[in-house]
Amino acid sequence: VLAARLLKLANSVARLGTSRPATDLRTAVSRVGLNAVRSLTNAHEVWILGKSEAVRGLEKRLEVLARQTGQVASLCHVVAGKYTRVPPDVAMLAGLLHSSGRLYLLARAGNHRGLFADATAYRNVERDWHLSVAVALLENWKVPDEIVRAIADCEDVAREPRGTPSLSDVVMLAVTIARHVHEPAVLETNLREVKCLARFGLDARAVAEMLEASKNELAQLEAALA
Image (tube, rainbow, N blue to C red):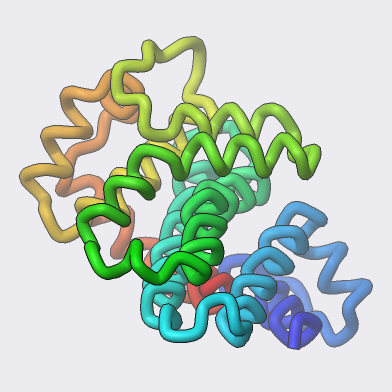
């Protein structure tokens, strides 16, 4: 299954261009790069987790989390390629790993079902702890510091921008768009008032145009990652 998904990603419109379709794994890996392989492997592990006893009864929550994560990861890929010098495959991996803390908490919550009796209580735990948990996990996995730092900073709206747009900025922008894509007024306020987002010079209309222009690319990447 993982091999099939890798071939699908390699042959997506986002990556195919004028190249001939990849028909073997060596070509697919060479085409997408190791960071994309890591991204796809992580997504595949989420799929496997969805079939485990640990999340029995929580499949719907896992499905929503996987879909949101795929959306953020694909947005990171597109934003990095269009607006920054950040390698798109690195950005996609960071976007996928940004929800590691939420995934960990969801898997562990399966052993504490009482927590789900109060949805507000669980949301508060997730809100307050998911980034700290993600950073601890990623450091333990020896994930590159740049990615760990980007995930640690992705919700810090008070952070001061430095130099050219960074991976941290890309992840923050992707998370913001995914969170408020159906709330254009809220999205535009964030794009204007959060300094690390304002540097992109985007408004809600520009984001909508970017999403429409990248619709096929985003769909291909989300299908591969979700």
